[in-house]
Length: 365
Image (cartoon, rainbow, N blue to C red; front, top):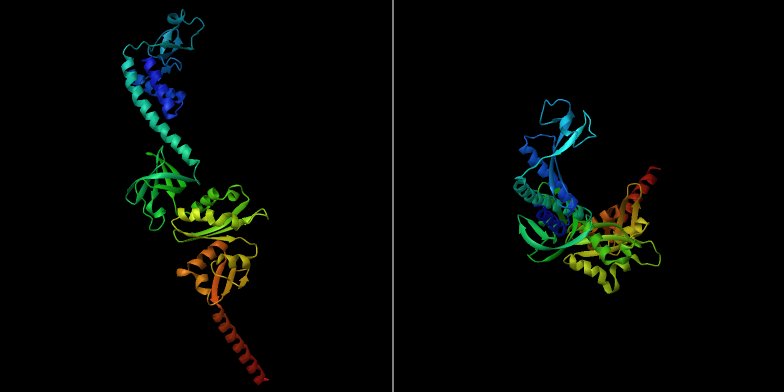
């Protein structure tokens, strides 16, 4: 039994990455529980496994007394004076209990406990491994789709990617390799649940960190990001090093870096905006692809009035107001856009109003 037990423990320890001491400890606890049941739940019965030989020894701990009144928990000084000459009345001794048929019980318990421990340890290993990867991009293979959720194979375990966390109109098939942002790891009674997303803005930030060494190294920083998954993203960047062009670093030679990210996002458009301390310049750039010449701001209320050329108005606003909405989110300013002709009309109306007011004042005088 001892050799077989040692072999099984060593094998599982190697294959599953569970420490040998952890397996022995949990097995010891389980066997102790089994042996105590056999002895009527006596708490003075204990058990030890030799870590080298895996020999199992069972002991009963008894108090040394002059006269025994409870033979399960006490032993007389006369009985143990030859074996334990140094013990005195009031002390305790451990007396080994011979269990001739305990091997069968031990084998069954060992099997159950080891498999249970393996499951628990694997869950803990997976949880500890992936909780440290929260905020990173991981790759996996699509296994199946059930009730609006994709299950992704990560080699050691499965992750879940809800369909609502995929890009609009994105259909993943079994066997597809997919990249996703690890947003959360939950510990549950059934084991860890690893949650993935492809819609979170942090997914794009992580993609840029992977593709742009200057961002990974901290030379170029991402100031802010605004995203409508599957459609458009605006990302504001700046460089700590005046000699490094933040936008150029993100775009890459001939657009290779940003195009790699666009392909991963199934064609989602990305506007890379140079961050600027001057809100007028920053807001104008944030409204890309529109070209903006004039902006008025109210710093107290953080509002901005943008006057766009008539041909640029639709670009500034964007389809369903998307461009101005993303620019507002990116800059943190409440932006209103009007056309040049509308602005001129307002100015004309204000001028006429002022003229009429002046005429009225003169007539009164």
